[in-house]
Image (spheres, rainbow over the protein chains, first blue to last red):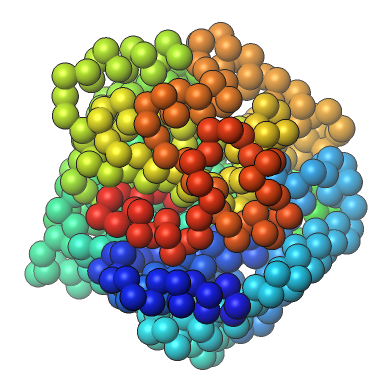
Length: 168
Length: 168
Length: 168
């Protein structure tokens, strides 16, 4: 929260950087959920109309049972200083995730469930991908309460018309 | 096909969401090829001018010998509920891929080769990255017949001018 | 260098494809640093105003001690023809990286440190993400000399206003 609020103060008097700002979140990991919500919430704080479309692995981020335990993986991630053979040991994913969570708490960054709540308060619209839900056998009951609606790619392309869209 | 056709009916009477819609596909996995073609084909169905640029690992998706057997990886993919140590066993990539293919068939989603054919029918332009081809030692004969041309980054930036571009 | 210079000659007389072109680089691997700098430097060569924002794992790419030894991972990368169990053996990441570096040299592509120097010469602005630096405990002294400034997401959204932004 601290970071977002600090940014709010800093940018309070400027106008919206983008009149419409959209994110397609296709990844389900902690390290990609953070950039998605930091960008979405910052843009909303600055006055933009903001939409996030959760598709493919990104659906995990709004899954009621998964959102609280998103993970990062030490394997296949050259950003982490760990040989693959170590990354393979059971528990290493949990350890890498714990390390990142520890640093996040230390600098007082909000958790992903907290960032979803903030997004909602800031007016960010959260859209779940209908095709992915069908593919994964997930229903609206499995999603967090903050989701605005379930739409297909065609509807999302219409929503994002004329704005800046990022694919994460 | 069913999904794309259903969307076609639904959006038949609306105008193009984006006059020009471009995708840079840099990933060679099944789970990233799907969003690329679903977005490209949906945008084309809605009347947009659509371009896809296949670069880096994305070149695999238009490689004649690889397009039919694209894979997803259970390792390094926190979206799949599988400990790394299991993901390491030979055959697990094949199993995860088979599971995804099974679900895709069940909801009657087209395969990637089918989506490439549909893209072509809808007028989507498919561009192969010349630098990547040089890097991988791949020639035009190795690519699927649907490819329109082989271009460099400079030409693609000119093509995409004034449109919305996503990097996948 | 050869490739970039060749493109320079080829596109020397055309106007900028995009008046402003921005990249958010969130990945720290060799295979994603390349597309980022190839697109950034090509756009700059064509006359665009170009900005790159290094965030999350992308901060590694401008870390003085890491930029010279960025890696690709044979594990979790379906683009490489290698079973996971082999990818796990110590040394395989190094081998896959060496193979890619070998091919890069063969076609005379510049290294990442060289591409950063070229970016600077072409007027590309390089921005480090302040939140990521705090998260990783990295200071400006740890970054390569070419970095222009350290900014937050809010400032970057303002900088990118009205341009085309890609998330890599």
